[in-house]
Image (cartoon, rainbow, N blue to C red; front, side, top):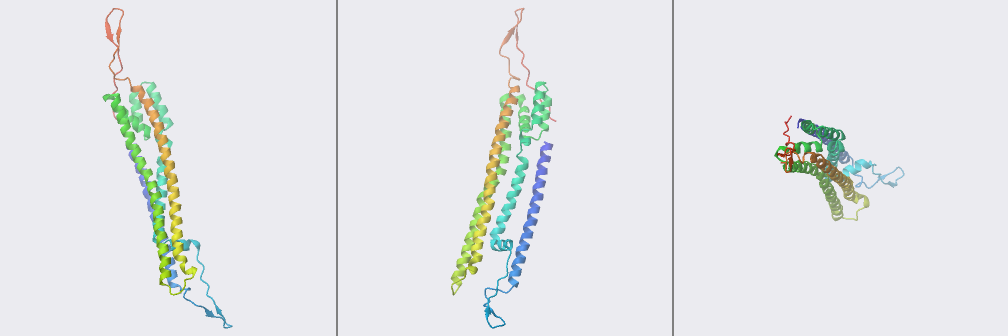
Length: 299
């Protein structure tokens, strides 16, 4: 159990370090966005400038200063773009955390299975139990739980294995389920940004005394389109990884179930009362001997 606790602690520490890095990145993005807005506020509004006289008396239009695409996207996305970016970093953290846990070596390590089978062939049941207790794998925890209940009967040992397997499966399914939640929330945030951008555009049209120019409606339309794009960019990978991880978990659980059943069949007849009676040559009957159920000593 100490190995399991240490493994979970390492994963938890990695997750929090990644989360702090995400927060630092988001703070830098927020500072960049605020600085861009401050520069825009300090710069004279070009849309309100009519023009200026050149040296020969002709009116020349003022050109709007060029803005980079990234700065335009950050400014146009607004608060909903910031929330979608936060969801994006959360999705990346969850995908990396599950990728570290949902591996074959964590469910069916070949070295453990080979060592366990050799100990069973050698009738070293106590050594097999200790190997299962020391293993951090899924199959190791199941076998340790089942072997720990063999003294109460084979059926109860199988029930204990099923209960431990269901608990482990539910824990992993909850982690994978967060990806499905992100796949549902991200498009909704993008839709909120779309509605906000369209409201901004129509509000400008309603408050304008003249026919607005396309450049004057560009901010609201850009907000609507950018947030929709960002929401879909986050939602699609979340749904894809959710399906991949769910199928991989189902395959690992099926293989673990087959392996655990085959290994536990070695203890199926241990501890059962002997029904047949053997008759010696002298004519006296003696009950057939059956190995007693092993009582394992915990580490």
